Every structure is written in C-alpha cells, then in structure tokens.
Length: 495
Ligand SMILES: Cc1cc2nc3c(=O)[nH]c(=O)nc-3n(C[C@H](O)[C@H](O)[C@H](O)COP(=O)(O)OP(=O)(O)OC[C@H]3O[C@@H](n4cnc5c(N)ncnc54)[C@H](O)[C@@H]3O)c2cc1C
Picture (cartoon, rainbow, N blue to C red):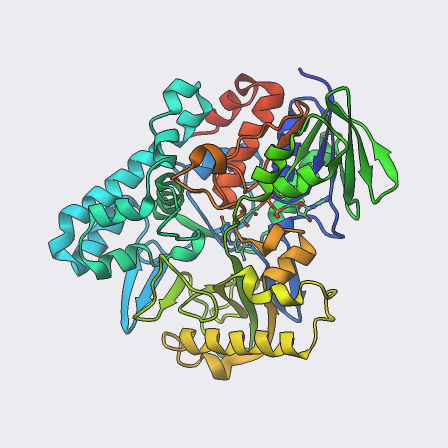
C-alpha cells in the first residue's frame, strides 16, 4: 500500500474523485474548498419545495455497458437514486416547429433518426457506429501510450465540425445531430472530434438524472474520503503555494494557516493555480503566459424556475429548443438562439413538475462590465440584463411548452459571473479551457506541471463534464500512484 500525503485544492468532482482514489490507496488526504459548501459545479440549492442544480444536470453511460458505469461503481456512486431518462426519447431536439427524438442505445438512436431522414440512412449508421467505436475504446487511454494513440491523440487532432459535414449531407440532420449542443461548446473552428464523439456517445448509450441533485455525488465522495481517514475542509481558500527546492513545500490557506504534503493536486483553473505559486524559478514566464493565454469555453445563463403546483407535468427527457436560423456551431453573444429545458426529478415521485431549469450559452464579454462589483451589489442594470435574458429564454422554450409563462412561480438566475464568484472559475466558463484540434499539444493539458509534486486535474484537462472529469481524475492520480495501482480496480468494475 502506498503511503504519503496529498493536499487537494477544490472539492468539485475532480478534487473529490482524486481525494477518493488517493485515500483508497492508503494516502493521507486533505481536500481544501474555498466555498462554504463542497461540490463546485455539483452544488444544489433549495427554494421553498424546489431543489435546483447549479451545474451538473444529467449524465450519460451509467448502464452496465456504459463508460461511466465502472468509474462510478469504483467511486461508490452507483447506489445513488439514478433515474434513467426515457429510452425512446431522452433528448428532444426542436428546430423551428419540427421535433426530433434522440433514443437510447445506438441501434434505436439510428433507427429513429432514419425514420425521419431515410435518404441519410448510410450517414446515420456511419455516424452512430463511429461514436460507438470511439466510446468502446475509452479505457484504452488507461493503457500505455502506443495503445491509446489512435482513439485519443489522433482524434484530438481532428475537427468535429468537419467530421459531421463529411458524414451527413442534409443540413437539417446536421443541425439535429448538433442539437444537444449545450453538453459542450460547439465551435466550428476548434472543437476536437474526440470531445464531440466521447461525450455524445456516452449519452446515446444511456442518459440519467439524479433524484436529489448533484450534491449527492459530492456528499457521497466526501463521506467516503472521511471514512478512509481523509479530511474535507470548507472555507479554506488556498491563497498561495511556496516552492522550495523544486517542490511545493507549503500551501497557505486564507493568507494564514500553512499546510504541507508530499503532493499538491489542484482542480482550479490551471492558470489560476499557477498564479498562486509565487517567487519560483521553476515556472518560466513563457509557460505562465502560454497558460494564461489559453481561451476558455463559453459560460452559461441559467434560469432556475419554481413552478406553480400542478401547472406542468414532469417530463423524463430534456428538450433543446433552437430557432430555425440558429447557427449551433457559431453561437453569438447577445441573443438566445437555443435553450435547454431540464426537469428536476420530483422528490415525491408525483407526475407534476416542481421545477425546471432553462440553460443557454452566455459569454464572459456579456457580463464582464459587472465583474468588479461584489455579489448581490451589481446594480439595477445587471438585474435588468438578467430579466431580459430570462424572458428571452422563456419565450423560446414556450414554443415547445406553450403553458410555461403562466406556470412560473419564481425565477432565480445565474450567469458566468455567478460561477466566477462561487467557484472562482476563470471567466465563469462552463467547460474550462477550450480544446483546439489545430493545436492539441498546447490546449489539451496533461496533469503535470513544471513543479513535479504539483499536479492538475478537473475539466480544463482532457475532457470536461462528469465523464471527462472522472477520467481525468484517474490520469492525475496515476501520476502519483502509477496507472497499474488504479486501472485494474476500475476495469474490474466493468460488467
Ligand atoms: C451550468 C452548467 C451545467 C452543466 N451541466 C452538466 C451536465 O448536465 N452534465 C455533465 O456531465 N456536465 C455538466 N457540466 C459540467 C460539469 O459540471 C463540470 O465539468 C464538472 O463538474 C467540473 O468539475 P471540476 O472539479 O473540474 O470543477 P469545479 O466543479 O469548478 O470545482 C472546482 C472547485 O475548486 C474550488 N476552488 C477554486 N479555487 C480555490 C482555491 N483557491 N482554494 C480552494 N478551493 C478552490 C471551487 O470553489 C470549486 O469547488 C455543467 C457545467 C455547468 C457550468
């Protein structure tokens, strides 16, 4: 059993999973969280009888053959109250006044789309088979580099946009296949095929909500870490790291208390983490400026809506509504061209919905002018801006849900500024650093930093989202323990 100690910065999914892996392998783990609540993007909040998720809303691939299943089984998360979304339609894509179902399972997914686009039968089959092939090889990346190159590295160097255009020719079908776009930032110029294929594949495999919200994941992981002897400390903001002799020798919390450990793992945004290491010759200026120059993905505007009792049925699917003229691969700032409607699973299993969330991309540039003001003191114009965005989201969602306006009881909103305040995410980005297939060597980061005992983890590396962050946690901890100490236990959880 390895021994040693690790400080982990951040108690979002990435930090907690790293804490879990290291504690399970006998290390002395301390997770530090700057906020008063753990969870980062897994946090939930309650208003009246409604419980809202802040980030995470649903996951893909939790069925026994799915890619997330062995990971979540390993992390002890399969006993949580997961609810599978409707197999015939887990995501509904609405373009203008037409509606298209995404069905679970590759064959059914293809079949349902072929019914709507018979002339694209071959393209749909090729698309689905390719995604499945990429997904089936996700754990190759636990193997030595030469075995994983084909399905990871090479697909990080290919354009997702080009793949889609080469595979199907009907522009409406391309739009439909891009129509669940909020799971990632669709960017025609940059999005690597690996990200597109791996994430879409996991959801096509099977899609799941969590009754009770994402904080159940955070609570379970934190509970396991503590049960294995580790600590999870809130209101503990890491304010600096001190390098001595080429290693991080001290971690300073809240500009006061000093902690030491053999390893430090940061789940913060990489450039923010490196900025905390002052007075070091180990990190060259050119490296720092390369990291701080990396672009971030868009942020998210969310309208969390508490509904009037009995005003709307619970739908066991997500609905993505797009304007006819929405350019999903080049979304612009300032307008609402697409909105995701997500239903929270009613805690009482009733047929009525208690709350829904409307999510739509929002850029940092749209809110930056209020970034100098403290939380809740951003002025009337910020409130008006959020109200106008809420109305636009409700307006668009109402095309599919005509009764929505009358069903609204209360609305709570968040913008990229909220994330930058609560989770310190740089530019309130929803998915961290923007990976770019044209420059994978500089935008797809590894856990290693120029300081050997300082490692990175979290959504800015490799893949984002629940699946991506879970995979990355394994890669990060492999730099401490060796992949052989972790991978067999995870692969043994496969069915
Ligand atoms: C609106 C939205 C919706 C999403 N929906 C989904 C979804 O439905 N499905 C899905 O798979 N993914 C979704 N995601 C993405 C997913 O939630 C994230 O990729 C993932 O949770 C990120 O985890 P993380 O650990 O990398 O980062 P975070 O959750 O951001 O955690 C980082 C933690 O570090 C802490 N921290 C920062 N600075 C310090 C410091 N100096 N000292 C101590 N602690 C610090 C923060 O407070 C935070 O708790 C969504 C994201 C957003 C924003």
